[in-house]
Image 1: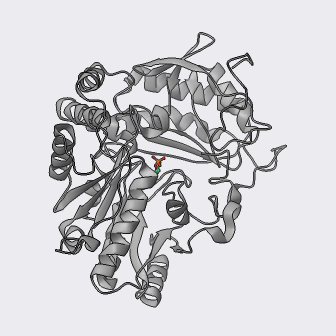
Image 2: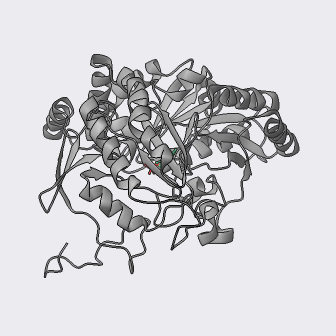
Image 3: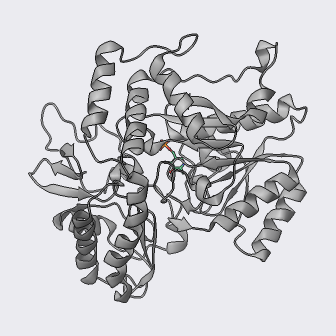
Length: 441
Ligand SMILES: *Cc1c(COP(=O)(O)O)cnc(C)c1O
């Protein structure tokens, strides 16, 4: 944005951004279907679906129409002591879609706040079950659960923002995912040792997102469920990124065939239109708060909780999941991304190429000149935001095959002219620290 009497360059304090040194952000003036229109007249294929959220593409007519109707009727009304049809319908639909008795939907206004609400549900559950000392959480290496202070405490302490805030962050327990017998033992020991103080285990099932774009198998998730049962602690599935078809099933827990005690959903919930998330509890958790004592209520209530516009968008999105084969498309995209990105294997410094559903990741030894790389992708007609040691795509689930091919070939072309080996890097980003640092996600 040029400096002018109406725009002050530093009026906006930007996310994950060193304001002093970062290049100016890209100005987008409109977004339609699968492309972002830049202020300087370019059309970019969006490889990010705006941080996983735009699952049906931008400005889907059904979503727009539903939100427009709701806008005329009632853009907002407070949720304390009030209810409305869009929220009732959405909660009922989510409860029906989710397995078993994951039936009690708490509306939050962002993913991080849904995680905070889930933490309060779990801590409150144990207080009401006579175990008030259970108020810590265990999460896994490379975890990412959000940016608010409670959620931040659940992120991987070495690869997140812990170091920037020190002792101001709650102390939680962290260990590797139990992918093999050794790490399974470690989790078992940790839960045994801390059983009396652990309220719950937080897990991103199948895919860890902003903490490093790492995948694990259903068997790992099943192992965690079993260990939580054995030690009598709650399991909270954070499906804010993986929910709504992203991994090739509606929810990752469907693939894993497990039922968590609480599940958090967000990002694609409103098809990338408005900010809303939910924490959904099973009856066992919900019932702990069910009493004649008002002091037993769940004390949380964001101002814009269950915003009717956001609910209308979410209901429209669920209509599209019912009408169109979005989840199947995500499954098909896995092979298309694998085929399209595989030429990168021979590029110096490429460590791994992995795909799951509509997620493609190219992991490298090091990503030098990050800002320059982003600009080269823009020049090649695609919008990507590489971070840490990953170049990754999470496009709209219904991105048509020719777009997937163009996206992949742009990545291959840009990367082919470069090297990503640690020894070649002029400015080395230490991979060990590069997971999620300020100015990275
Ligand atoms: C994005 C994300 C969050 C935080 O959601 P916000 O809406 O950004 O607050 C939490 N957990 C996971 C797994 C996420 O991907």
